[in-house]
Length: 149
Image 1 (cartoon, one colour):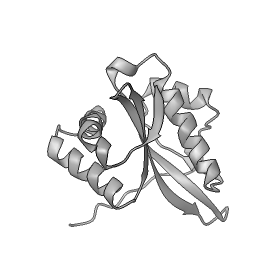
Image 2 (cartoon, one colour):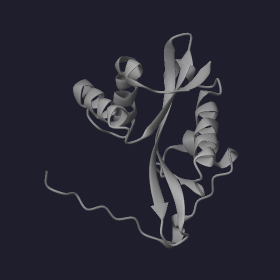
Image 3 (cartoon, rainbow, N blue to C red):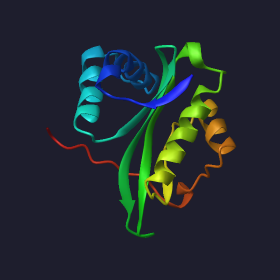
Image 4 (cartoon, helix red, strand yellow):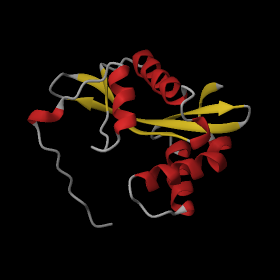
């Protein structure tokens, strides 16, 4: 299995995985939306996506967005998405993707990687903690403002 940078040639295989990822977080299935979103991120170079390629079959992906932390005055990456296909689970795919994300962020001068996950995503939480991630937002509330589009 190879962990490689996703490009336009991966969109057709990556989009269904992204759709399944969204469904995990209770979004309705929408293959076209998933394809358009992934296409836009790749084609506009707005995120970094790594895929786990097992002989031409994608087993998972991780997506990072560049950002900054003004308080610490550092560059950071937001690890927004991690998904492993059922066929890749229990085989170290998630860990390999997370390690590649860490290497990429380090290579690009980031001071840290931030992520959020659902309270009930116990599998993800165990992986993150195994890899050294710490819960840090117990002193803060998270807010979101939906904007009209």
